[in-house]
Image (tube, rainbow, N blue to C red; front, side, top):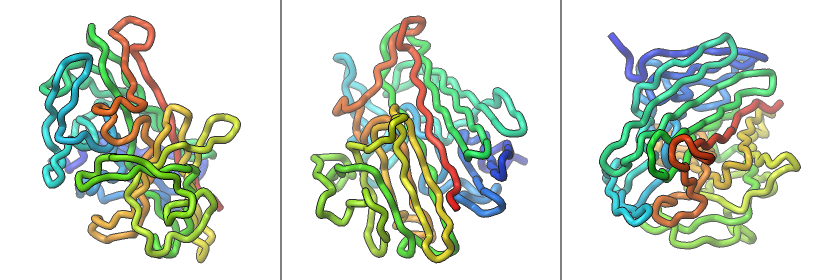
Length: 306
């Protein structure tokens, strides 16, 4: 008998422990000194609402699943039927292959074959690595096709601190603009966060704010790293999600549609905003196989804060 997410790959180092699954190369569990820092799921369950999944070859949504690339009109399957969108890529339910497993790291691969709506073959690779500094995740795509291929990537971890819920936590999001969306959750504009309920550039309580938005114009440190922080003032627990300069967008979601609403905050590092296959905004174009630019790689990670 095989469980819903297949084989389970456990790694540990520096007080951290993680479990990554064969199904979707998904982060099912991450804890530090026995304390959960992501809201995962049980081994006998499927991941709900994107929990821990990798989003490749695009994150978030594509309106109507329809887009054009280099003069070619393409139609993807509508995997978010309620809103009429193609959502979160093509590999989050796929069986990934184990490449290497060590005590502190695991790498998996998946060959995304050319198919209706995405007629390019792309090799995908992910490395999960633990150390005393926490978890580092590196996602890589390599174009195997003779034509350029559109690409973007993201991930969908849910951060958790303390034993309470979102309303009691404090949030820091280093971004100065928020995308405005329509009824399909597709961007139709943007606005500065200044003076709005969505300005979390300085840490403050979430309280009853409902968040399901992509944020851009990200502030970074001298190394080009942007960091989102969630803290529980009652326990003093905190968790940080960082992302490198390949990731210019952050989707933040307070999980209203979860089975237990507002028990965690999804913080999704993204290389492009929603609907990038249509808008072209920050869309990566992988060069033809064997030429400069046929590979793209980006890293993000999670660490516990005292």
